[in-house]
Image (cartoon, rainbow, N blue to C red; front, side, top):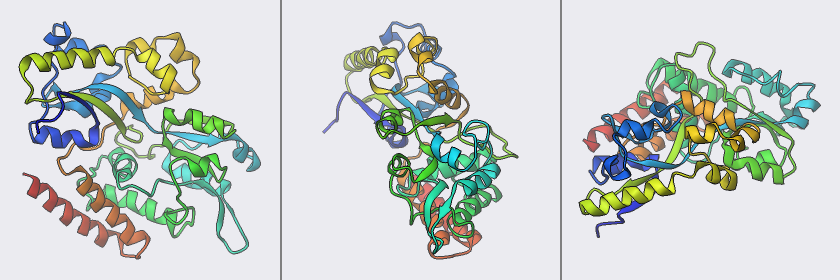
Length: 341
């Protein structure tokens, strides 16, 4: 079949749609606008917040949700450790290790009963959103794991779970459960959408930006991700025009969307609204989006993510030397990208 005329999908799949020429560029004319730039100018830092749907300078989607992770900190666990969650919160990855150790509790056998912080070890997509973002802070690339930058970040992750004993896949449950259960003091893998879940659990918290390396080349945090309304390139021209009009209408109510769902459509209209400014910490997410990146837009998005996750697990679980494991990942990724051409 031909598929729907209008659909919404996350940016992890947009590389496939673009490679297959399945999506049409946004038609500013259909929206009653003079140009694509006029549409983009409605958004905060559009070169960053919309970048996930831009190919060769053309915009291929209108976002109905743009999200990014920030760090939730449990005030009570900080206080128990004699720390101030605001003043003592780590701003660099180097500081994160030291602060996390102070927030960590172990039983008589050395098993963790409370973690200071941990990464997300489940789905391979976090190798882009978290690990890859840390590599790009250093000026490296997710697609070049056999690099100095990638090795530094992988060493940090592997040491976190092994040498430093601060967490790892054996302790990971989900994005939210360990935090809402009071078992981890800092969780940096949750967005504005987690607010109600955490408050329902009775956790008193603050939100802080994701740390950045001391010697960072780029000031990005973890990755921005989004769901974009896209239009089928195989639909008739008049149908495409109608689809873009509908998408524009649906995605032009950012204040209502945020108030009712906690999700962001990063429009200037929203950023300047009283509703946005009255909700604590929402500005942190928008500030992070303004300087952060999307994960690579690839036709083989998950295949590459899986190769990176295997590299991580070979060193964390099997004890393989990190350079060897990353070189294996490099060979796998090079072949994946070559086969996709």
